[in-house]
Amino acid sequence: MFEATQAEEIARKAIEVLNLNSVTAGAKPTTSLHQRRSPLASPQYEIDTLNAIDLSHTPHNGDFATAIAHHGFESFQPSALEIFQINIGKLCNMTCRHCHVDAGPDRKENMDRETIDACLRALDQTTAHTVDITGGAPELNPHFRYLVDQCVVRGKQVIDRCNLTVLLLPTMQDLPEWFAERGVEVVCSLPHYRKLNTDTQRGDGTFEKSIEALKRLNAAGYGKGDPKRRLTLMSNPVGAFLAGNQSNMQQEWQTGLEKNYGVTFDRLIALNNMPISRFLEWLEQSNNLQGYMERLVNAFNPAPLMGSCVGTRCRSLGMGDCSIAILTKCWI
Ligand code: SF4
Image (cartoon, rainbow, N blue to C red; front, top):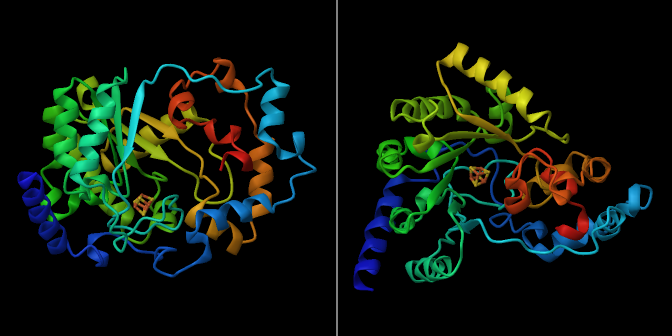
């Protein structure tokens, strides 16, 4: 325990040195709901806001249970656990407008070593083959590297959900090689392969930093077809619409990024935005909430439930181009 406390203290000081509040550390187009004491920082307020939306004119009155019953599913039956996802904190070097977890430099909630060890004990009792680590910016948790190493020792495939810009912070610059040595899959957020779209959502300068980080990952062997150095990009729409066709987008992005920046990656996941937290705030402020919720209900897609969806991961993790389409207010 002494070792863990000492490591935590050293890492805490290292984080202080990073001066995460500065724009240099990462773009900050907004502040957290928590910092502004917004009512939307309260989960119950979010639920009440969503439940107040009138969806009675949409299929099945916008009721998820009725929609799945219509397709022959009275309830969900859990299948074997394949992917063990751990959110290790809300601390982040950025404050993106659409953030679903209200992360930012002011959010000090970071999972402590004791809880991480409890997660590892829980992991040992499962059949999960993969551990998916997220945040905030998970790399900023003082115990991040310990957690990754413990998962690798256990023979697990590890995914790091990375915002890219964090890789440019002074104490994080060895991470691409560090990940490569351990075969960690890096799943990176990049809303768009065009600067304007990305910076609109994540703040000025984000695109440039993201391209630099992707180049460093490429230099470490990522994004070149090696299954031990898999580089996945995660795109989410910049606005109140749903993602397009994932395979078409992947082709377009691969061409655009390689031609313009010499950057390569292995696959793209097109993810839709959850109508929660700061994205919910934006939907309300831009008068898009009603329309967006109707869009979600109308896009209901039973394929993942029926096992006929090619993106099997969205059944276990909520990732994939159609996952959000099966969500309505009762799931929030
Ligand atoms: S969306 Fe990701 S990078 Fe942006 S503030 Fe939230 S956790 Fe940080």
